[in-house]
Length: 219
Image (cartoon, rainbow, N blue to C red; front, side, top):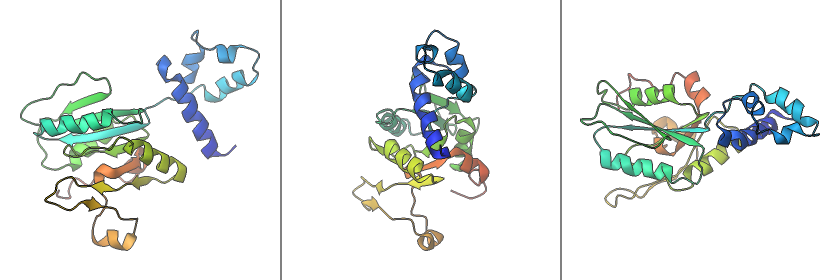
């Protein structure tokens, strides 16, 4: 069996076990909810041995950095909660707004920084450090996701086995451009950044490997 197929199987098993709120497969088979393993199915015990220490994590962490824009933040969060893809957590990093926010949704983790940093780099790096997802998505507080955004990005990144994927950006402000849709072109990217952060999905391991965002680069 290929590593890609194995990873797909593990994701399916993890999805199946999520309702039981266990962190590891071994914890699951010690409960009463193991009938599909307990019977005469010989592969059950083998599956338990193979996956006993396999950790079940959140698939996507959506990081939203914000500062003094509570109405826009609420709109951005709503667009994430309305996603057709449901295996995510939302990490809100508040760069020391005048007033703290309050959320009662277990999918939302809110962090209020002790001081304002004046750029997105530190809040984004802070969010990465708190993320439990295998993949990271970024959403600016004045942007929103279309309903299938995470599903489409996730499907592409898993099928392609890429470290990072991105999508199109639509601008609903009539005073500005309609947005942009540019296929990957290294020559153009070397001259200008045409990839909006709110359209990106990236492996967390890849972000950690490059050291996250350079906090010395001005916004």
